[in-house]
Length: 367
Image (cartoon, one colour):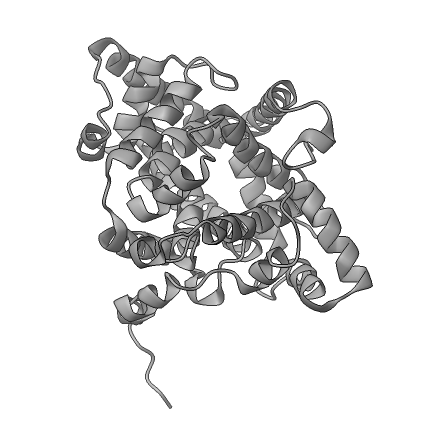
């Protein structure tokens, strides 16, 4: 019988430079095969075409749809539901952590950040892109959202195809692979999932909202399934939050290289969020919260300003989150009240800030 390798040694082998270098030249073959055969349009319209051609032609279209509709044996729907309720209850602080911590830290991986600059998807019409991210997570978090045919499942199909079309667009326009590797590759895709899971949890904790271990475990399972749906390959899926943290450290070790593009993207996002729903927070407070989550080293690289008044406000916000977390775990019904409020608040913001006509939205549904 073969002796079982220690977990840390298994991770070292799984995320060796040799493997990770290969991941930087591996994208999403199923989605890319579909993207090669359709014209660019709104993601919702492109998915309609894919679904239609899967029925009439089969082939690459059917393979993509079958993969999206096939639920892996390891998916535990009780854990998915557990995570859904936790994520909704903490959606306010988690949303801030995602935007001013997770996504902003992602820009420090300069090769991945260059995709956003090259496509203009973030520094142009930045608020629209942020609300579209909110639309995806909102649709995923409604009851049954990730079930096949649910609104979140449909939106993830649209997002995954959008990423394939971004790769196609950039390559048609002379993407410099020798400098930046493949655009939206497996290593970058894995880090995006880390942003939604580990880095969001870390940002929440640094702002005073610490989840219990069973909640973190459920949330990791939720985003593991989300990673699968988004086209992250089996080699890059993590079995635990601990493994995901190790994966994060390896990617950061390999790719952390903040530059002027990184600084520009971070400042653009924070500036655009200032005073906007759903959070309606002033720019000074957002800068201090970002600094609280990122740490001073990266915040200084991004040239995020300091302000003693807003620093005190950030500390007060952290204290309020600690109180809210205590209420969540100790006051009966507080978790359900928070979840209902957060759901309605985000949905209203999406309805107010995305086109009223579903056919004019990038992603059709607002659940």
